[in-house]
Length: 268
Image (cartoon, rainbow, N blue to C red; front, side, top):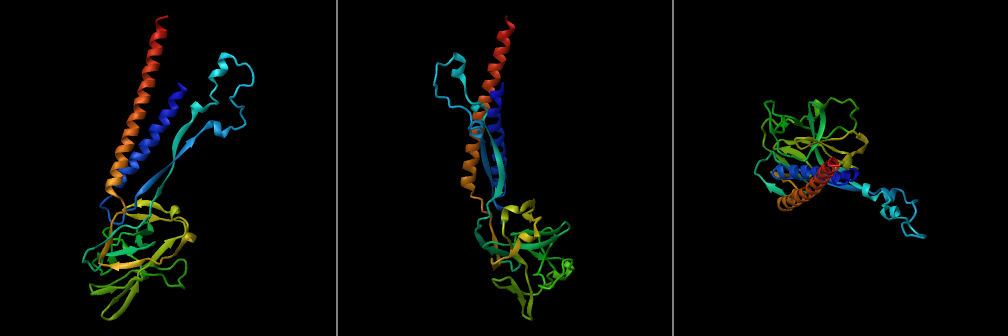
């Protein structure tokens, strides 16, 4: 039954939506998590073939012509894609001098075993060498030298504090009682939709030309919370489950009709 593909496409789209909403809910308490959203697209065969004749009769119709549908029963829906909502999360004080929150658009640069990654999770500490690292042990990077070559030694950008008491201003400049130490690398992107989530609050960019400097304000001893609204997200999740259940009932009805048709035909 070709009509089965219409509700089936709706069920698949709703399942994708449920998966995204469930992931958002699961990350309500994840530092600086940015919620994802789904974009749906409806495919209407009639709109893709506007040259077809109008259904308004201009002559006497045969009985078969009354069942013309312009193939509209073959319309379907699918998820056009998933995108990230980069809106600001609430800033919460922590009392930890190595916690940093960004207010505004921007990311910290962190060196991972897979290369440079970008994050808004500003929860850092010291490693055994006195370098500023995150919970994964990946090092926070200082601002690159303007004259640095393309293949610069990234180890020169490690921020080493050796347990000193530090202060960080709104521009990300780190100082101790002995004077300035480094300025953390804060970057932004001309097109954030080109960023891809990699897990662990990391983002990766495959377009270096998309990167630019950030004007985000750094708040020391603060962390940015997730921008997921738990109440709204749970409400959407419940609604999506209900839509999925409704579509499932339609699919079940189609299946029952088909089974009944087969059994009736077998009697002849």
